[in-house]
Image (cartoon, rainbow over all chains, first blue to last red; front, side, top):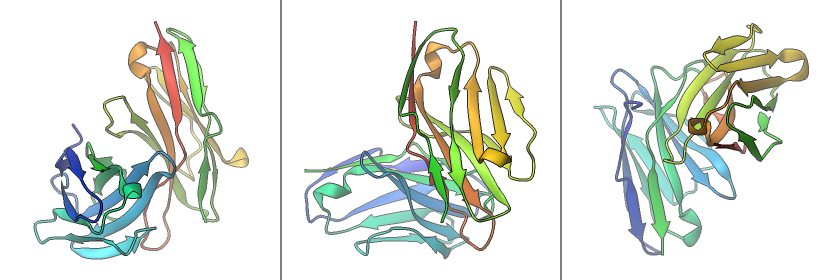
Length: 114
Length: 116
């Protein structure tokens, strides 16, 4: 158990819909990362937050947004969903935001778009 | 830009065989960090090891060992006396230390199947 909690574990929805994925980091971790894992793109970095502030952005679509709340949990919002958004979405956390700190991953949310 | 290449896509071995998973990376940074993660069939990503770019000492942890060679930009992972429970997808990843971005850049992963 990594200590990172992601909910829900599975989401099935239709094209055009909007969903929210939730992540609670390990106790004491200030930094949260979101990654997308798909068969064609592999594991791709989406966005990083550190202590409530956006720290870095990857190839995150404009239809996607995220935030980190004062209690340090984070939410990833995906809107106007398309079939290609079907993927496994991981949240990870680390103590700080530096590159030398291991990121510990949650179990992921599997999103299926019908 | 940073890049991680895992040229092997699938490896199949018989239990108790040794197996080496290759990882080659590219980065312009002089200080960087390398990681290995394991993704078992259940889907979670499990952190295995971190290596600093300035520490080329090899590391051994039980049946696992890692060989870091800066001269060839490689960070290979060897499993000795493999077991069925080692069956998983293994990812090598790179993080740069400069700036505010500490994202992980992952390779495509190597699917390891260990047959009884």
